[in-house]
Amino acid sequence: MRILIDMGHPGHVHFFKNFIWEMEKKGHTVLITARNKEITLDLLSKYHFDFIPVGRQKSGKFNLIKEWVLRDLQILKIAREFHPDFLMGIGNPSVAHVAKLLSKKSLVFTDTEHAKFANGVTFPFADVICTPSCFNYDAGPKQVRYNGYHELAYLHPDRFTPNPTVLTELGLAEGDPFIIVRFVSWDASHDAGQHGIHDKVGLVKALEQYGRVLITSEGALPEELQPYQIRVSPEKLHDLLYYATLYVGDGGTTASEAAVLGTPAIFISTLYCGYQLDEEKYGLLYLFSDPVSGVKNGLRKAVALLNDPNLKENAYLNRLKLLEDKIDVTEFMVWFVENYPESCHQIKADPEKQYPLATS
Image: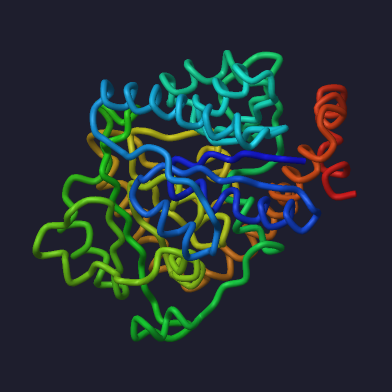
């Protein structure tokens, strides 16, 4: 089988990396195209993937539309030469458009209900729309729901083993209390009118009374907070999240990553998804979405958790329950693609059978 995967964001590299390795081990051929956004290309290089750069991030909806049109044309040219059986991506219009033009099959993943514009120009052309079972939107007969989260494609314990050496790089040891704080840039097309943490300095000063604060930020930080910013390779962030005492931030993906790793996450944002509401049920993620009181209430909850001597033990048990209920998403992806279209028919006939089918 020949598969073309287009990646438009650093998170897409994590999501697809294990799938690519598994499929290549099975003798399939995978071609990667990638958008030059943030650290996407750097991550691909760090994981030793060959790829073709296609497109570059620019601000503004008009520039985004222009870029998508150009990406369609570039990926169409590449696909005509590669002759894929499948095209795959996350919330990716170009994958769906090019597959339709070439009469090939497209498989589009998404977990973001509020990406309405991207979904609107992608869903009508996609052959399969794969979403978590907790996705709060009915995408119609093309939709296939799986019992997991994107983050379980790369942070499921069968796919990820934490490496404590990153702690040494930062002058930490296992068991030291520290808090990961994440600030996002709020410049995505679906971020308009939304916000997270305004008083960054006040939040950090309050948290550092309970442990060392390490900041990861998409945008520039106030000068006062720059000493807190961590300088580690991006692929090591998941190791840090695993060993952290707590996560606090307005980055939704990082909050979910912390949760599935068993680190309680305080997520402060007016914008959230169905999978974050699902993770709340396990006591691993706490959402504070009120635009007025969200930061205050989020900080109050963070302090309460940091004062709990059984915090990590309780989170460990909560994670075990989550993992009992959810699947290894990479294993599901491999099974679904290798057995398509029969896999699609089987899930449509009995959605509850996806897990034993995916792990058989």
